[in-house]
Image 1 (cartoon, rainbow, N blue to C red):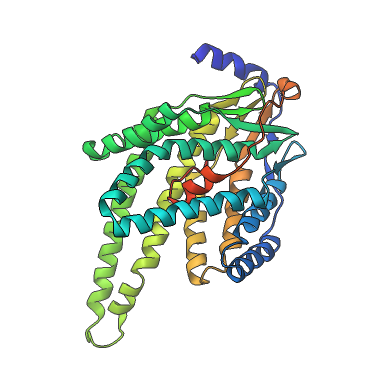
Image 2: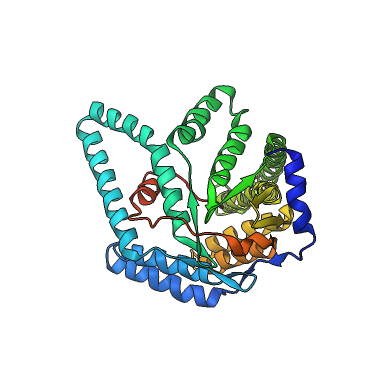
Length: 357
């Protein structure tokens, strides 16, 4: 898409008041859902996790509003359970075979690598088809070849560039995902710039180095106070703080990067003739949210997770506006119903991240 078409598409939207994305859920309600999900999942040896997934997604989708309309999550627990059982079974077979027959296990690992693009595509298709807004479902139209290049080939070759190619690879991955999303019969269009990814990555790396140096200096000074190494002095206490401080810093840096990239993606995305997006997520504020969320979760042994999740979602919704164009009322729902979630669950079991956040 050229710059002329982008500007012309923006002109109608600029005359329409943007609609604010809203999240109406609260930590108290979600804590009740979350704790029941955990207890029942433990009592059923993991079987209830399928119901837990659906309950959680239905809660967050159902409390997300745009222009007075709520989002819907359409998957059923049985769909999730079938996919999860198949995926876990596949993982068990792989683990057993690898333990007794390493050569066969290596061959299975290679076969799995070839399956990764398919699992990512199918997982995205399932997730999109299970998402509905204004009675119109989303869809994903990616293909195996492009997924193989973007998710396997390019990340592998970036290793040989000492990861200097990685920001460009991440840009390609985001472009591949978002440009293959459909809302009904309308495609999503996004124009991304590699320089934005390099700028965000460079900022995070420099801040990370600076903060780690300062933390290292501070911990060295604190450790020097400990005169009697056999006692639980300030130095030992400083060492005890290393892991929480590390998590705090990593979460903050993650927040800065995610905020900048999220703003870039949404501010350069549109659903053809349907909607344009605006994101004004402040990197410093989002970094503080993620860092304090991580600290709260650690200090409460995980009990603050519902509060942290709701707080994060509310921040993301509050920083998002959508300009609904006249074509929003003319969208046709041509998405086909998904039969199972095997690929999505297989991707989760084998640690393939297909999230859009």
